[in-house]
Image 1 (tube, rainbow over the protein chains, first blue to last red):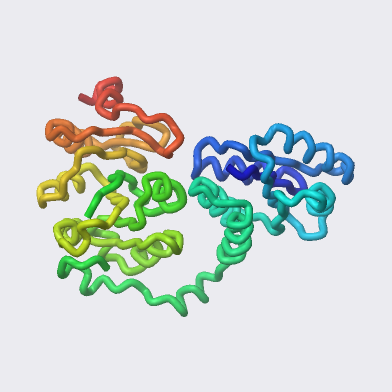
Image 2: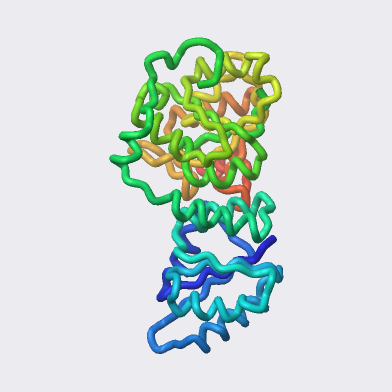
Length: 149
Length: 163
């Protein structure tokens, strides 16, 4: 099972983990890393090192909040020389949840990266836009026949 | 139709079901069998958009679900079936749907109900329906998520002095 490090400014990583547990119960092989005021890249590198030693797989997907932010920059240094690691930025709940689901289904690192990019973006919608394009379910014929639909 | 998993859950299709149970039980199709949701255009639309793209999902009345169950065209279809109440399970069985096991997952608390677990409450009417399911030999399992504890639901009702 690919390991995941979720790294953000402040406590967001821990909060995302707590929320994801509502959907998945206990979640194995994920480490949360926080980045607090007063800390620097070196602190993050230490935290990534500690986290990676605890994780059970040497394939690691980093999910970080901001492209170009310190959690990302530190992860870039950490991952640069590793072929079995990657980073996806813009972590949000839709991304995290879909990645965890894909991982349960045996997803590889590359597959999890694709899932993260798609789900992270696809989870952002406007109600009005969705409903102007979406065919509203029609219950008029609902209770007829024996075909699914 | 092969019912891989039958779950009682007032929220029908939501994150726990769409992202977790469906993968866990290996079903490609989710059916929410519920009369009021099937007849409510907005609720039906909202339920259908929860399910991930790789899963087919349907919201249908109990009667129609039972008819589809018997349609030979779906003989090999692996289904995760979600209903709102134990009474709906009885209605499906009365129409020929074979049920050996039910996962009691989530029943939202309303006034007059007794809290059984963090996620499950029961009304006196639910208790009667669960007793009937038990009498028919259906195994009732209290479990919220695939990796959380599973316990015997009838024992739980006994421990709460409800039966």
